Image 1 (tube, rainbow, N blue to C red):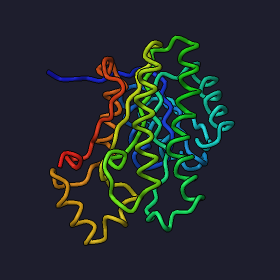
Image 2 (image 1 turned 90 degrees about the vertical axis):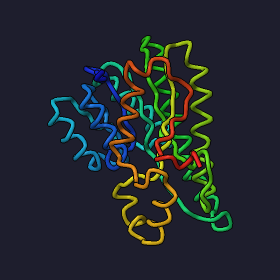
Image 3 (image 1 turned 90 degrees about the horizontal axis):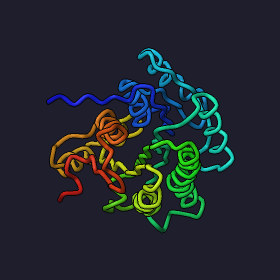
Image 4 (image 1 turned 60 degrees about the vertical axis):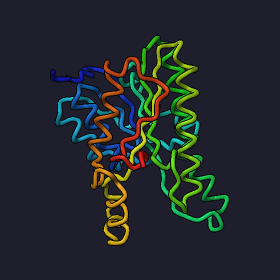
Amino acid sequence: MTISINLTDKIALVTGAGRGIGRAIAITLAKAGAHVLVNDLKAENCKETVESIQKLGREAVIVEGDVSMEAEVRGMIQKGIESFGRIDILVNNAGVVGRKPIFDTDEKDWDQMIDVNLKGTFLCSKYVAERMKEQGVKGRIVNISSIMGEVALPPRPAYCASKGGIIALTRDLAAELAQYGINVNSVAPGWVETDLTSSYFAQKNVHDYLIERIPLGRFCLPEEIANVVCFIASEYGEYITGQAIFVDGGWTAI
């Protein structure tokens, strides 16, 4: 049996879609038929993503904004509604990374990590879900967490806390929003090959340690995360809510 995911004319908002995993998610949703609201901090960051979506014959609109700022979140959602009339799918992908031991993590480091990763997910979910509820949209919210929301890999106290918070937030929102027909799940990637991780993976000691530790013996591709997001967002995800789905090559299994 062949599974064909059909998101024709669904409207998706993907945050942090200018590069890496976010770009792959936006393009994969478009391949399934969705029109996409492409978010990033700066409009110029979204150019390649928008061009790729338009080449697929789907519409793409840039909604510039900082997900950690309430006014900007409300503004980008309003622009999305004005452009397409509704939002069916929200993917909270925007995030920052950091690797500092607790003794070197200052208040500014902590606040940035929590504000972008966790508060940003909360704000976008709140205001998109509000519109879904008002319009009777049976929507999907997919939050991008991390294996480090489940298991530690020191030294990353702020990052682990923010990603673990996303998983907990996902469960609460799933229970709260189910009455409105809104499904909420999180996808927790393992080690993904992107332009942001390439220099880190290029270090031989890091590369060898990670590959040996991953049961499947390789890094994940951004498109493999995007495929899972697309599945959850489709009709096949109808009975899936409140889950943290680990796409990690088996990292959290051992």
